[in-house]
Each structure stands twice: as structure tokens, then as C-alpha cells.
Amino acid sequence: MEEAMSVYITTPIYYVNDLPHIGHACTTVCADVLARYHRLFCKKVHFLTGTDEHGQKVQQSARLRGTTPEVLCDETSAAFRSLWKRLDISQDDFIRTTEPRHTDGVTRALDALYASGDIYKGEYHGAYCTPCERFIGGDTEDSPCPDRGRAVQAITEPAWFFRQSRYQEWLVDHIEQHPDFVIPSARREELLGFLRRPLTDLCISRPKSRVSWGVELPFDPEFTCYVWVDALLNYITAVGYDTDLPRLREWWPAHHVLAKDIITTHGVYWPILLKALGYAVPKTLVVHGWLLSRDSKVSKSRGNAVDPIKLCDTHGVEAVRYYLAAEFPFKQDVSFSEESLVRRYNTDLANNIGNLASRVGSLIRKRCDGLIPEHSGLQEEDRVLRDAVRASADTVRRHIECWRVEGAVAEITGISSRCNRYLETTAPWKLPDTRKGSVRTREIVRAAGESLRIIAGLLHPVLPKKSSLIRTALGLCGDAPEWGELSRWDVLQPGTRVVDPGPVFPRITRGGEFVDQGWGI
Ligand code: MSP
Image 1 (tube, rainbow, N blue to C red):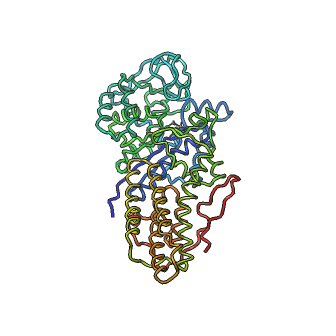
Image 2: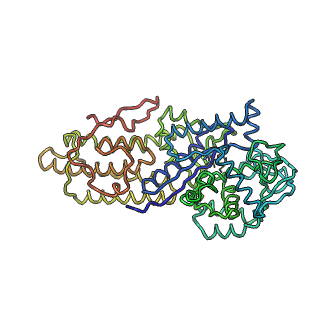
Image 3: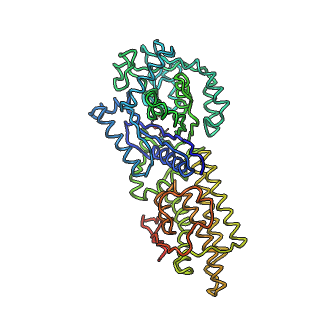
């Protein structure tokens, strides 16, 4: 039994001014897949997601819709939660920044920063990006927001500042000495590039007259806290910041999964805030690219949002999970289209893994009386297959340990193709039904069955339901497998009657109808 190491994985907390779309689902599904893999590797996992509910944008959206921020937050936060339920997300906690456990923590963090002399009052004069809720360096209205490319406004107002500039050198050293702090490495270079310019101090307040929907500054009731400072703190208020030290110690520091649009806030503001508060910085920022639709980032404001619920209704939850994991935009942006989802599903699941499952099922039915064949001697070609399948489990693990969800999925489909080739080469269906012929057939079927068992187990974090369906059909228990089982051979119980799982990955045809592919048992 491996030592149970704690792994804390988070998604960004999403804004509640708009409904969730496929871009949010991309991060959350991939973080869920990572969390489930780490559980499979016997780690103790805490997986957190939630909603970011304060700030000017929410205040404005509520006004525009003729409702209150409270109602808007309740409604949209519930929509995120129900989408995560639909997508089978296994979060251990869902935090809302309007909950007292969070707002109390923010107040205490602000008090601590004030007491340590890291906060001072001044006047802010500069360009402000309302959609990002962020002051932009420089004081011109001409240049657009660097993160999202939108127009900015000029603003002058009294404000409270956080002395982040004094931590710049420390942060650069930290990033240089910890190559895994930001991955992939191109994003780390981007961040270091940003840090080559001198950092200005961070404006952490908003006048209440402009933004009343926020946490009040404990040392100046005329102001509310800048929403990004408020939001970033969720990662520690959710696990006991300042209220439950043993709990915080158990989980913190975290691995944060996020997209490139919020790398500065997570790679600069957040580690510096933590340092100033006396806490360790995050272990990893897993910074992925975007899902694009019609060549631009999927987002509500660009009007190209794709509704994940509709996709689930049309293609099934696990087809959507599979697509997002297989196409995880780890290094590059990925263009989303419904056709590419169907293509992925048909190529990898219906034609490859589904085909392997139905071949194994029908061989067991036709050539082994519907029973798992007994342990048998392995010939050279079987040994080669066994070693490749076991090595594949290790490769999947290595990919996940480097946060490469798409790499892990490609490895699984790769090994499944290999098993299909093994069946085509050994062609057990062509062997004669004589005693000698059927002994060899059963050896081959057993080897293919063991491979299918391991492949289905490796797929469990991505497709929990379909994986369980295949494993139950092979006479195993339907729960998540144990990691140790996936590196062993000869686990299937000889003599167990297999059960027809029905169509596991029915092909999606043009008309959207499914073609049946059961085991015919
Ligand atoms: N509330 C802040 C985050 C605070 S975290 C302390 C925020 N919210 S957001 O609703 O705009 O979500 C941004 C995140 O959603 C991205 O970083 C990414 O994880 C996910 N995505 C939103 N659109 C996306 C794509 N089109 N493609 C991939 N991920 C996308 O920023």
C-alpha cells in the first residue's frame, strides 16, 4: 500500500454574471479527471470548485436584469452546481465567496496585511478594465486590456494599495528555482517575461460608492475589497484559513488548474499575497489554453458560447467528458465544434475501445461458453501484449503526474488499438474448433480480456459510468478500481459468467441515432 499523500486540486471560481459554458466545463472536467486519477493512485484528494460572487460586474449585471446581486448569485451559482452534477464532477467542496466562512477569512487576511504594514492609502489614477475588474498598468485609455483585449476607462480615486512591488525579486527567484511552479514551460516564460518590467503596487480597494457589493475593508468602511484579492483567498478560506490550522496544513499548498487568461492574477498577485500573509505559495499552476469557437475564445461576451447541457442531451455526458479530456488544450488552443466531438467519440470510443470490448465479449460468448477462460500459458505474442499493457498503465500515471490529461487519454486509446491489432494478428475467430485450436483461442481471449480489464480501469477517471459497465460485464465490481489491480495480470476470475453490458459506445451516426453493438449474450 502506497503512502496516502494529500493532493489539493482547484479550479478557478467562476463569475456568476453569466451562465456556464463549454469553456468552464473544459477546466472543471479536466480538473475532475486529474482528481479522480490521483484518487486512483491512492492519494488523499481534496478537489475544490466554486463561484466568484462579488464585484462591480455582478452588481451591474444584477441591476441590468432588474434583480438583486443576492438573487443573481443564488441563481447562477446553482446553475454551475447543477452543471457539475450533470457532468459527474466529483468535487469535495463548492465554495461561494458570499459565504461567511469566506468573507470572514477575507476580513482576517486584510487585517493581517494591514497590521504587517503591507497596505497603505494613496490615490489611484489609471486605466481600468471593467470586465476584468482590474486596473491596467499605465494610465492611458488607448491601449486595450492585455488579458482580454477589451477597451479600458480612465479613473482617478482614493484607494488602498498592497505593496506587492517589494516582493518582485523574491517572486522571480521563486519561479526560476521551481520549474514546476508554472506549467507548461512556455507559460512560465510568459510570466517571467511579464515580471521583467517593474511591478506597481496593487490597488486592493474599490470605493463603496462605486462598488458596494463586496467585502468591506476592516480598516476603512468607505471601501470594499478588490474582487480579485477576495476571490484568490477562496483557495485557503475553503480549507480552514485562520480557523482550522491542522486542516489547512493537511491540504495547503494546492495545485491550481486555470486557463491562460488569468495567469497574472494567479502567478503574481496570489503568490505575493500568500508570501505577505506568511503562507506557502501554490505547488503548481496548471495553465491551459482556450477552447475556441469560430476562431475566438468561447465566451458569453463574444456570443459564441456553447451550452454543455445541450451537448450532454444530444451526445451523452460521457461523450462530452471524453471530448474535453482528449482535447485538453494543455499547450495550444483547441477549436471546438460539435463535429469534432462526434469524430473523436466515433474514432476513439465506438471504433476502437468499443470495438475491442465487443470483440472480447463476443469471443467469450461464442468460443468460451460465456465464461471467463481459465489461466493459461502465455505465448510470446501474449507476453508482449501483457508487457505493453502494463507499461501503458505506468505511462498514463506519468502523464497525469505531469498534469497531461490529453496525454493520458492518448496513451489509453493507443494501447487499445494495439490490443485490437493483437486480435487481428492472432485472429482467434479463425482458429479451428478442435481441442488444440480451442485451447489457443481461450489463451488469446484471456489475454485480450485482461487487457480490456486494465484499459477500462485506466479509463475510469475519464468515463466512470462506461468503465464500470465494462468492468461489471467482466465480472468485476463496478466501483473505481484499485491502482494495484491495474498493474497485475490474471485478475479475471476463471469460470465467471460475463454479462452483456448492452451497447457501450454505440456509434453516433449522422441522424444522431445509435447503432446497437451489444455482446449478444
Ligand atoms: N472569477 C475569475 C477567477 C477567479 S479564481 C480565484 C474568472 N472567472 S471566469 O468565469 O471568467 O472563468 C475563467 C476561467 O474559466 C478560465 O481561466 C478557464 O479556466 C475557464 N474558461 C473560460 N472560458 C474558457 C475557454 N474558452 N476555454 C478554456 N477555458 C475557459 O476569471
